[in-house]
View 1 (spheres, rainbow, N blue to C red):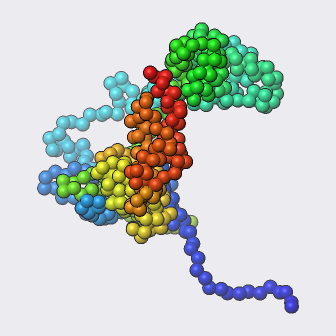
View 2 (view 1 turned 60 degrees about the horizontal axis):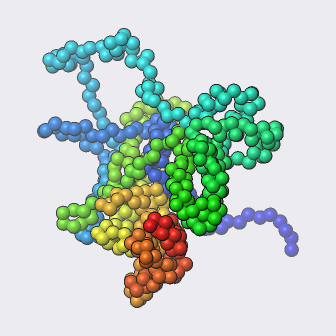
View 3 (view 1 turned 30 degrees about the vertical axis):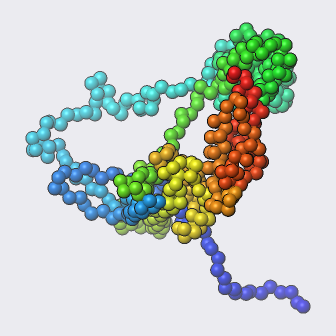
Length: 497
């Protein structure tokens, strides 16, 4: 059989991920902060895109110019359903008439003043930017570098110190292998240890420690309380975490009363000495969707339009520059900008509608949670929601990523409402894993010193309540709640007494 090249034609179907489709998928999974950053970049890149300004307040009897908008239809469902509202500008242009100084003078207005200069005679353009007048937080690295400059180190030691500062984390720890660092810098490990010891005397006390025990030791040394008994306690912090007081009494050579005093001193220390320096301010969670109850008991689901960037394409500018474009490259560039702007506007509109659609179905499924709380959270998965709204599971997964919903019971991530199902002991409706976790926490919080529940006992109580659950599952849920075992809880309650 001869082997020779040949051409064949075959017909087939394949899903092609166009750039526009990739953009739409990308926008779905962005949080509102990430979306705002993306839109800012698009506004800078695409000259045809503009930010749609909010509508100005109109006087009585004044009519507004018609605008082309795409609105998400409002829906209302009694009980578990909701109304969906959205107002998304997709292609419009707002015109504001300019008034000259002469027009104002004719109308009897006060004479115009030149506000381009301040009372000091300096032009506003010469004044510093607002950001430059704000006080800046000193970072931990800057704070340590300032102290290192005053420590009288040699140039070689300053080089080692600068490298150590680079390795300090936000908590103030310098988790470094001194031998590896010495090899990288081409010096002796003793030099690194000597500089590290000097810098461990910097403020805040405990900074530059390599682990928690060393951090505690540095602070106790500063207070003059690092005696042999305290050294033994710091060296056995894992026993303290497990509340093994008998062993600690033996290792430290103290009685229970002295041990309790020593533990109180440990608790008064700062485990994260660098946390107060240069920490980024906490970012408040802004909900993407609001849920509120109407007077008739219906749940109203509304899109938070403040988190939705409003953009439009300037059609007049596009028509004018297209007419003046002579080169083919300019025409291609303008066509691409127009297509990208149109696709972005449509993608934003589709993103908003999809978020509302998914949120509506979640509210419908979890109305018991909204009315009665976590104990009535139902088992729910992506497949159930996707089937109900006729979308793919991957789409629902992207929509619920980094999206938050504000309910009368607080602000939750949309993924919070997707929980595994735990079978019912009597064959009835399954229980939500989150609801079971809440029951376990409630039982443990209600314990008394004389009645501490073991995992086996919790299993029995849950089964009596109709929840079929294994002991290892109870242990896993308890650990996820950061609740200690029954033995450790007994020791802690005994120590409190």
